[in-house]
Amino acid sequence: MKLLIVFDIFSKFGGGSQLCSLRWFKNLNNLGIETYLLKNKTKEKLNIYPERIIEIPALNLSFVFKGLEIGTFLTKEAINKIKEVDLIILNEPGLISFLLSLSQETKLLNKKLAFVFHTNYDYFSKNFRLDKFDFEGYFLKIGILPSLIFRNFIIKNSQAVIFVAKSFKKLYGKKIRKKSYYLPIPVSSDFFTGFKIKEKEPNSLVYFGRLSREKRVDIIIKALRFINKKYKLFIIGEGQERDNLEELVRSLKLENQVEFLGWIENKNLPNILTEFDYFISASNFEVFSFTYLESLLRGLPPFVYDYSSSREAIPSNCGIFIKSDEPNYWAKILLQYKNKGLFIDLQKNILKAYPKFFKFHEENSSKRLKEICEDIIKK
Image 1 (cartoon, rainbow, N blue to C red):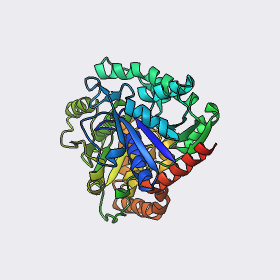
Image 2: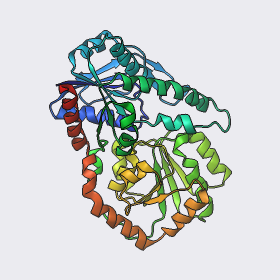
Image 3: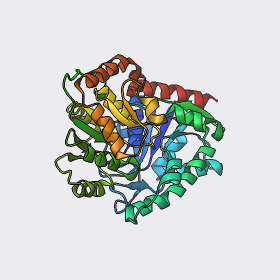
Image 4: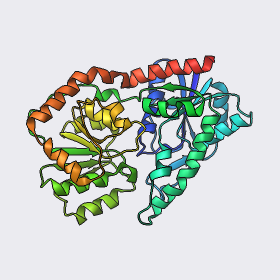
């Protein structure tokens, strides 16, 4: 079996779908499955199976979004490799994934395609609003429709769809009328080292992830106005919203309560996260978020928005689910858990639930993907 994983919007600041693509690429090869990665050309070079990485020309759109580059066309090397493989795994509805599905539609390509459903573009189309004009927000808004069109076209021409969340498989599985599979996301093995219970009163919050509008980090920052310096918030990540969030902190005079730590490589996160007490995120759009699991695995009870994806990832007695967009309500709940006993109990619950998380270990996820690929190919 030969596989080709396509991720044509690779970036230094890439999110969950990029992490999935890279970890599956690495672990499938570790399992002895000849797997290639087709990606856009970037300055950053990958040192995992470099002989099996195919780079294609890219268009630099960093003037729109920091670090954004998209693959533009297939090279002769890429086309030759496509001819060799048994299955092409498409991640995100980029231009190259669209062209490959178009080749399938026009019968130029006689290869089986599987599309991995990573991103909730339907959320963007229904909920993304521009409160005020800004260059990056405008380009994000006009990019939603083509992304949806590309995604639906790719799904139409794929033999199967792979969902990384059970809730989305249930929601879309019958609508798409394609063979569908559930695949747990691949969390890095570096996070699976256990943790020691902190017997103390909690005093720090951490958010880590992309700093973009849909993550709703502003709700968390605004909540700090109501907690009278009971917690300090640390923000890890980069994105187009960072400047706006820093300005929000200054306008609310919260400079002593909020610290921006910038972008930190995922491989360094496991050790850094243990320095904090609670994880917090008001995002309500994720298909499935790495950050929920990564925080749990490092012993950080999460404060999260209450919706299907957070409920699927976090056992009910291991986190705090908040069904509100009001910062003062978030503050009220945070103050309730400013308690040594409650903090210790949540950590103990996470330790008891720890075995449940091993299905998300990158090696186990990749083994499941191998089984899925074998099933798609033989049909």
